Length: 430
Image (tube, rainbow, N blue to C red; front, side, top):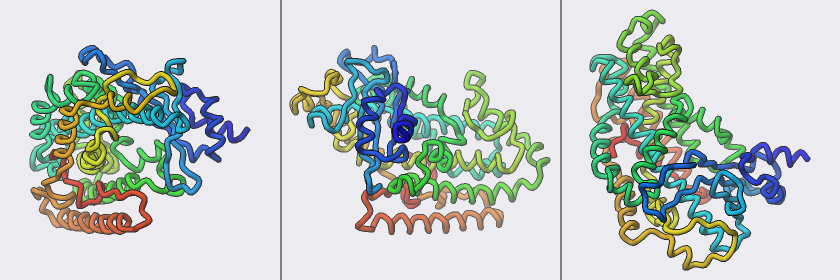
C-alpha cells in the first residue's frame, strides 16, 4: 500500500494510472526513481495552416531510474493528454516497431517544444525584450547597463536575421517543423506565460522545483551539475559588483533609471512592457541589493548558459532526424501492435526536409564568439569590477577543469560538454 501511494503521487492524473501502477511495481521501489515529462502546453494548437496530414502530439512519458541508479529509462508513453481507447499507453514490452514509433512521436513533440520555447522563445525573443528595456531605461554610463551589456551583444541582430530567414512565412520553420510558424508562436506565447525569471532562469531553483536537484537521487544529470556551478559563479560575480555600487537602500530607491528598468520588466506587454514573470522585485520596484543581484544574475544566466544548453547540442540530437524528428508524415499510432518497419520509414521526413534540418542544426551548433567572462567589450574599469571579472574568469576556469575531468573518465556514461564555460558564449550570438 505504501508503494501504491508513493507511485501514484508522481503520476499525472491524466495517465491511466492503475495500468501504469502495475508496471511501476515491477520496476520501481519508490517514487524517487520514477519521473515524468508532460508536454501539455502543446494541446489544441491550431494546425489548420499546415498540410492536412500534419499532426502533433501532446504526450506524457514516464521514466524510471534503474536499480544501479545509472540510467534513466523510458517506462511508458501516452501520446495525448486524455485517456481514450484510441490513445493507448505504449510500453517497452510492445512490439519493437510499435514502441519505436511511439518514442519517435514523443521526440517529435519534444523537438517542436525545444525549438519553439526552450530555444527561440525563452532565450532569443524573451531576452530581446530585456535588451530593449535596458536600452530604453538605463544610460550607457549606468553600472547595471555596463554589467549587462556584454551579455546583450549581437542578440538583436541575430534575431532580426533569424526572423527573416528561418521563421518567416514559408521559411525554414514552416518547411521543417510540424507546428509551422503559427503553431510555434502560439506555443511561445504559452511558454512565456509559464516562464518565471526566478525559477526558469535560475538553475538551482529550477532543478529544485522539478525535483531533480539531488545528485544522490538522480546521479547522472550533468546539465544540473554544470548549470548550477556556472550560475553560482555568475551570481557571485554580479553580487560583488552590485554591492560595490549600491551601499544603502536610499541609493537603490533613489536611482530612477534602475527603478524604471524594473518597472518596465514587469509591465504587461499590452502596456509596452516586457511582461516578464517572476522578477524578484516588490510592487515593480527594486528595494534591496539582493533583488538587483537575483534579477541581473538570472538575465545573464538566460543569455549565456541557458542559451548554450538549448543551442549548441542541436546537431547531436537533430543530425540524425529519426532520433529527434521535427516532422512526422502519417497517422499517429492509435493501437499497440501491427506496425511494420515500412510504416515507420514512410513517416519519416522527405530527403529535402532532412537535409534542411541537418544543415541548419549544424549551423546553429557552431560558435565563433568569446567564452563567458572573456568579454568582447569591457565596460567596467573601476578596481572592484576589474577584480570581480578576474575572479569570475578564475572560478569559471575551475569549473571547466572539473567538467573536462569528468568527461574524460571512462566511467562517464555520457560526455556532456555544452556547459563547459569554454563553450558558453557571453551572449546569444547565433
